[in-house]
Image (tube, rainbow, N blue to C red; front, side, top):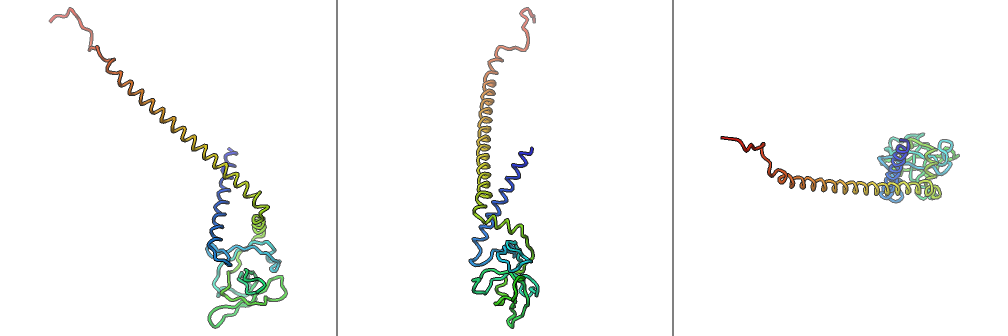
Length: 222
């Protein structure tokens, strides 16, 4: 019972990993170059520098929700496509220190990293706003970094997953063979039974020849 439970659990986990991997692959392939992938308006990013410490340590996984530019207020932590030439349009995550409305209805945000002494040199236009940070997890971030490392991903995830898939494939092939064999044996038994019935039906008339309804009395008189 325990073995069956563990086998079912492993299969379920492996299936979830496969589905997640395929979903991430499709999401990345259909995301325009230079843009962060989004699912239902949410984006997951991993912090790679210490500019937001102690709020977000390096490797923290943050969840960014797409927001209307007008909803961003001073004190919010936002992710945006940076205009800093040193970052070459990469996504940056800093805290908003001021938000200003422009004549055309757009917004400009001044931002600053919590660990930095000065504000960012380049303001953020609302056109480059990715969204507002609404959640974070250091543990998930560290796990995602490990999973992205080929030296960890291949032996710890890819190889066991391949073994599980191969085992399931062989098990499916054996099961299909057993089903085919059982069906073949059932067909043979059915054919034999059909022949037996036909033979019995053919023998029934000969067994009934010479039979009468009762004994005949030769001395009977009319």
